[in-house]
Structures are given as C-alpha cells and as structure tokens.
Image 1 (cartoon, rainbow, N blue to C red):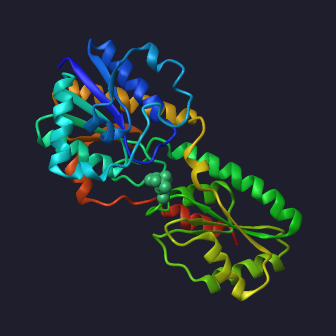
Image 2 (cartoon, rainbow, N blue to C red):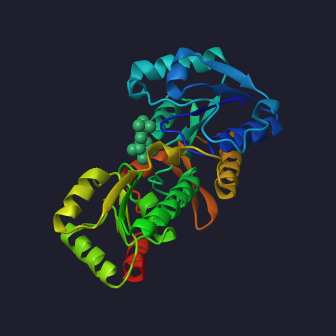
Length: 319
Ligand code: F6P
C-alpha cells in the first residue's frame, strides 16, 4: 500500500480537522502518501482529490468544521455511484480510504471494502449515536457548547423567574440532552429514549416554583419535538413564563475541546495502522477508554444505547 485517501462525510463535527491531521501525519510518518477528498463521497465521485502534506494539516487541530468540507450524498448507496468513486480512486492510485462521519458514511466505507478497497470509518458526529463506541468525535465539544448556552440562559431565567425549554441537537439520540442536562443542572431532561408526561413536568415546575426555585431549565432533545411545540403544550398547565430556545447548528461549530482533539488523534492514528495491516470494513471506537475496532456489519446489527443512568441521576438531583 502506497497511498491512502481521506474524506469527511455527513454533518460536520468539531474534531474532524484533528482527525484529518492525525491520519495525514501518521500515514506520512509510516512512508505513505495521503490524498484529501473534498465534499465527502460527492467529491470522491467527482474526482475532487488532492495530495496532502504535513504542512497542509498544520494549524488545523484547533479549528472547528472540516477543511475537507462535508456533504450528505445518498447517491453513493447506488452501485453506479460506488463504481464511479472506485474509478477515481484508481485514477489517483489510492489503495485505501479513511472515512470520518456518522453511520451513513459507514455504509459507503463498507461498500468500498466489498469492492476490494479497504476503508475504515471514524465516528465523527456530535450526536454520539454510533454503536460500539462510548464517544464520537465532536460530542464533547457540542455538549460543552450546549452547557455554556444553558448557563447563560439560566442567568436571564433567574432575573425574570422564567422557565426555558432548550432544544439541543440529536436527531434520534438523547446523548447531547442527557449530558448537557446533567452538566447544566436541568430541572428536566426530555429524550426520545424515555417516555414523558407533560402534565407531570408541569407539576414539577409548579412544585419547584413553590419551593422558591427562581429558574427552570428543561433540556429537550430535538428528536422528541420542537421546543416551541413543547412550550405550547406545557403552558396549557399553568403560567410558567416559558421561553423556547433552539441551540441548533451553533452546537456543530467551534474549536474542539482537548478531549475531542485527543480522541480524534488516537482514532486517526489507529485507522492508518489497521489499513497498513491490510484491514478494512472496520469502524473505530473507544470503549472503556481503549481504542477498539469492529466490523462495520456488526454496527448495522446493533443500536446505540445512550447512558440513561444520567436521566435517572438527573431525576433525583432536580427535585
Ligand atoms: O447528525 C448530526 C446533526 O447535527 C443532527 O443532530 C441534526 O439533526 C442534523 O445533523 C442536522 O443536519 P443538517 O445540518 O443537514 O441540517
């Protein structure tokens, strides 16, 4: 193996640049050449490919986003798209690929491996919704951003004795809500993995107010419902001076935390090492603080499980 390619795909996440840097530097350190592919699988098919040097990845580790850009490209699910991508890999003499992204990106990596091009996936998404890894690259930063926002909202909530419904990202997973909720001292966390009763939440808010609590923060995962709709429902049960705030894409940006940078560096180096061993079709993870790898097929057969002990913990700390 002489040349490897690298691309970022799906929603971006802080720490993707740190991962690109780690893959590039590890590969060059091991005598390989590295090619960056712009705009994920779309760029692969279009041949938007260029050689990366160690200097190209300098001054990147601390930057949010991905300097290789990202795209969602469902067309890569079709064999036609895959064959076009392979044509480009052959044209550039690329023998293997590292893909950084969410589960959609892993499907592409698996297909390439099936076509004879070893590809390895790194979990890059703020949602933390990938099986066989405790944490994904970008999650820690997104949680920190959400907590920072919650802290600020709490200031104004206290001043006006208001209730805030804070909608955080996580299309199908409650991880950001659970972590940001506990770290932000939320009165209530609402996630898709747990049923909730809005009447009960209204009762809790009322009781909290009666106990003299001057502010109420409800952290809501976007996968449950929109903050505005939640607020409208809640307000049917009392006058809580409710306001709804959607944090949105602000959670996807910003300089990655030290934790995300270290995670990205470890995972990036591991991907290169596995490709050098001739392995592909694997997804890198971190489990019990050890870098691991699993067959991508195993990931498709299992479902990510958020740490719901955080939900229970919050229930007992918020009464
Ligand atoms: O997959 C990450 C994620 O941030 C989700 O939490 C969110 O629902 C989605 O991406 C938003 O995607 P887009 O940026 O394409 O609107």
